[in-house]
Length: 115
Length: 114
Image 1 (cartoon, each protein chain N blue to C red):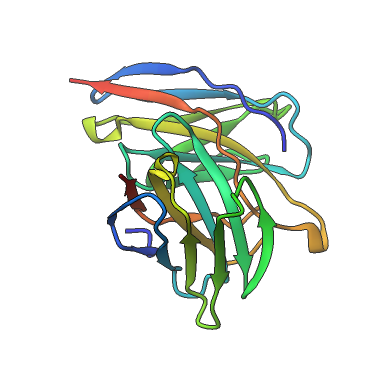
Image 2: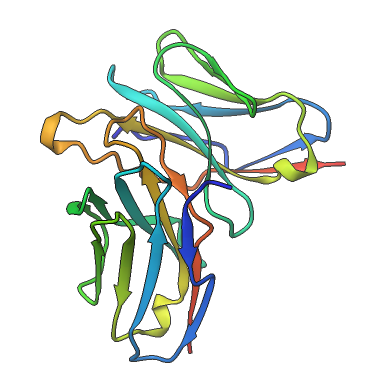
């Protein structure tokens, strides 16, 4: 799977948009970009994923650049409860019997939302 | 609530002992994944099952084993426990193996080996 690069940590003011960048310059055409977050010692929480197009759901928006080499997760109105480690993961669609679907987690970005 | 249930939430045991962690996947999900998260380590993939069969293996020790039962629940067995096995163990499930099928994680079992 393609490697991702994320900043180690970021701060965001409560009520403001949090924009979390991810670089995945070696991404292949059949690789999806996934975002998860982990709030202290809880299980990782699925946020959003996309292949080529921008995606939005009730939690966040995912903006993928046209060349797919980077993406940004946007939390539109960050709250204190959004303080967590955010993981950007590139996940490949393996062929046929090789499909496993497993996710490989990196170190992520620690987002601190401040009052 | 992800719909993935893990029991027990906490487990304290002594070195050399054996424990079993249990995972019930979300309704309809066929694939189960196990991950380990130690204090100083990230989330490490251990093993995966799909519809009862082992599908992928990661950094799983020989002292650890797992299985998925016909009702699709899964158990992770840890034996000859060592202090270094103290960690959070997470289970995740997904409907399918395709990359477009998100994994959903439980809230984990915290294992403490004393």
